[in-house]
Length: 322
Image 1: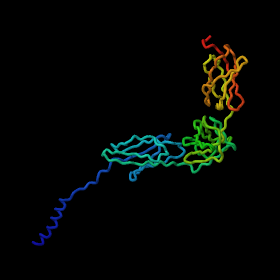
Image 2 (image 1 turned 135 degrees about the vertical axis):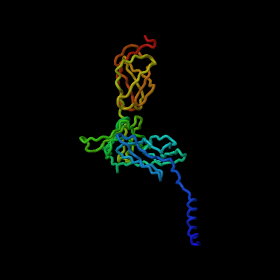
Image 3 (image 1 turned 30 degrees about the vertical axis):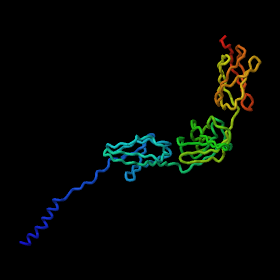
Image 4 (image 1 turned 180 degrees about the vertical axis):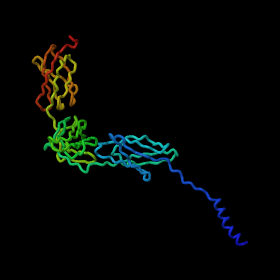
């Protein structure tokens, strides 16, 4: 009988321990994740970012041939999760962009965006002419190089005046990169304008493109030509105190000193009201003879250049309109 009770005792302990066993469930996973990150401003395709929910990073690779300067993201989140700030376009040079996700359970998570530009291996550039030059508002000497893309989105040209150290940015409004095998061989040609208000002088030129920065081996010479005035076709009917306007034809107006008109054999001074690089406004003086004078020569003195003469169909009337 003693043996029997010893046998039953362990079985009873097992039953007792089984009755006391507790089920332990794992903690709920936070609902604050980015499930998908994609770039949607690429024509005919999308670029997907790699989302790392351990390091809390998003990595996006941008190939150079898409010519992107910004990315427009579309972000998919956990159910009931929201971004604390609306996702906006991001410059591909931005290295500080983050996204904070607030889950429906109240938890938050912040992701760091890493944009990696897959650019060309190198950039080699050369002036196409031996004496690179430009006039204000004119196109600079062509630059040839291994651009490997026709997109100007990442293009920047900086001009540094060798004397004043003033920095000027190239005007990219008409810039283009093209291939022209017939004339220049299998290369890319870059056309950029210098600003209208640039000073004359020699400028060191730096070209930035697709993550590369190249200083050109020769300076760019910016110079002024003798100004030219666009022809005035319409008859100007004026009285003393009225204004007459002139615009430039090609080269900019610079250092205007005086304006005179010869009427009936006598020269009259016309005071300058305003003078910019593209427009001149003069005032009709007192004492002009009333009459229809036909094609009247106006004489403009710019700096030390020879006077610039343009003919204006002119009718002078009295102030009272007689």
